[in-house]
Structures are given as structure tokens and as C-alpha cells.
Image (cartoon, rainbow, N blue to C red; front, side):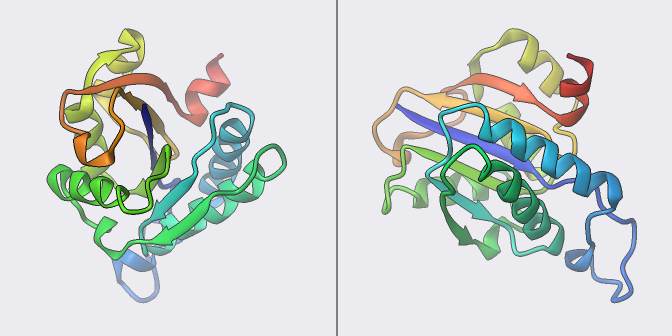
Amino acid sequence: MRRLMLLRHAKTETDTPSGRDRDRRLDARGRKDAAEIGDWIGRHAPFPDTVMVSPAVRAKETWEIASQAMKEHAPLPEVEWVADLYGADPAQLLRIIRMASAADPKRLMLVGHNPGMHELSLALAGSGDAKGRQALADNLPTSGLAVFDFAVDDWNDVAFRRGALAIFVSPKVLRQA
């Protein structure tokens, strides 16, 4: 069994002084949401063994804030900064996931961006939480987390439509609960 956690970066500023998309930082709501989702992850085992993070400032900040909140409850995972996560489409993201086979964590988290993360979520979901799949069909919002289980023993065997959505959660969903 392998568990994949897809975390979209938190809410960001609309522009940055450099004009570069990669340099956009989290805004106040994004910092709050990243802490909230990190706290949720830390209170809901199993926890990721490895986290792969996009090099974009907003993804790094999301992970840094979320991991600070997580560490109150859970051991922190190994972290890898993966340049190819920035702007990746579902096929590229699947290749990145399969790269995890070398280190072979049982639970892997990606921290990245839409549209790729949302499209990947839709492509992976073959079964699982029906209500979550319906909500996920609309969007993977900022600070949204989609968790998939795969009945495989190797990351190389992860494939589209073979994931079971275990849970879909976001700060907005948590506030409504």
C-alpha cells in the first residue's frame, strides 16, 4: 500500500516586485490556511515520510508554515526540493511520483501548483470517497489536500484511475465542519 498526498500551495499575493510568478509570496490568508492545513495533517496519521516541494516561493512558504504546525503533533518527513514540480502537468507529476521508488517511502506528499495538481487529482481518482471526489471535481483550492491510497507495493505501479481518494480537505471545508 502506498499513500499519496497532494497539497496545493496556499493563497498568494497577486503580483510581486520582480514580476516573476515563481516569486509570489503567501498573503495573510495563505499563511493562516497553511498553518491550519499543517495542523490538520499533524493530527491525522499516517503522516508523510517524504515531501517533494516545488521551488516556487509560495510552495516553499506553504511547506515551511505547514511543517511548523505539523511538528506539534507528528515527526517531520524528509524534504526534497524538486524543480520539475513547478508548472508540471499530470504526466510530468506522475513521473515525479514514480521517482520516489528509489527511496521507497510508504507515504509521499507533493506540494505544488494548479492546474497540474488538480488535473492529476482528477486523473488518479478511480474510486474512494464519493463526496470528496465530487467536491474535488470542481477545484483543488489553495491549501487543498487530496489524499490517495494505492494498492501497490512500488511507486512505479501508481497509475491514473488506480487511486482511491481517502480524503479531500481544505481550510474552507474544515471551517464548515
